[in-house]
Image (tube, rainbow, N blue to C red):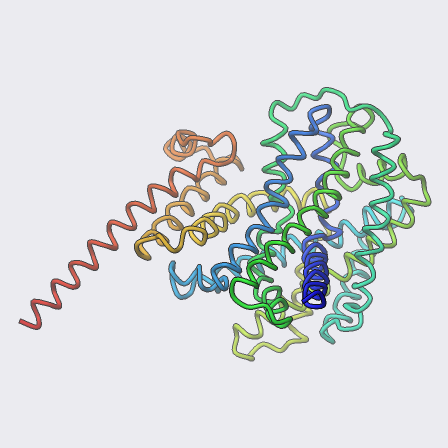
Length: 439
């Protein structure tokens, strides 16, 4: 029995660290410091907001998907094609946001942080040539190297964070930000990790099952592993946010995200720390980009039933991502904000439906909740990017919690109720028609 318990504890630790590594990406390093800079002396509410949206939601998503069995088990209630639509939306994010962001972060933070005069455009081109050369062979060799890169970068960051807490570069100051919690909560969407949960849930849950854990035991292992990942991410993201808060009186509020992290790292650990972090960052970003390009190419080849050539698909993906990366990390983030603002409420609604799946009376609740939430999300995003149509603005702003970015909650509830009632009435009518036909 002791041997079995030791094996289970070892497995859970390994799986928890693997989940942490799955969510922890070099491209996400740029978000916590800027949220801390904006929060200033109110950095604690900032950490709580980031922890909820950027850490808790992704890990709880994995737990919910595990409890339901799979992503398909949740999405099939909406429509038979909804799973492919969601994965397709995620692949769109990979092409136009996630992969370009790895390149921009690698160059602006990893290379230009140490060599400020390094040319950006040629480096972007070289970066994606390397991604293509490795990804066209499924990226196996770089994947093996990548297993050592994340731990190395985490160790470097851990040293910086501990030093930043014990010897802060300055005291956080008051900023003009009115609600640091909401700002950080919405900013946490940009990590994109809830989408990662939907994309990689089958792989992660399959790994747990391959170790012999089924049913309730699998759910238990998933929950404990998720807790381990949460603690690890909270340490890293929380520490980086605090570093940013300590720089609130030293750096301008409009500083670039990568530029801020470079400045903080140099102030905390000097050029040696910047050099070490830069090397780890470049290699880790490259590993992530290869993995994403490979996954996206596999998806499109499978979707085309093999009509697309894998190598050509990888080349097209790298070309599109390269063109996006040329605009720089801050513009990529600005471009991604509306995408995440539209997609995230839908994903969160699906998770809520998954939690309460056993008591939902029929599929109409799923359909109504998702459809009405989608309509509200599109309208809300349109208003946020400057579309000024009075009925749409009134609709968006009249919802409770709209200012907090949670205006989708009431439309979701209304859509759920209406969808449930319509579905129930339609089903009863169908049964009555069948009975009349038999008579």
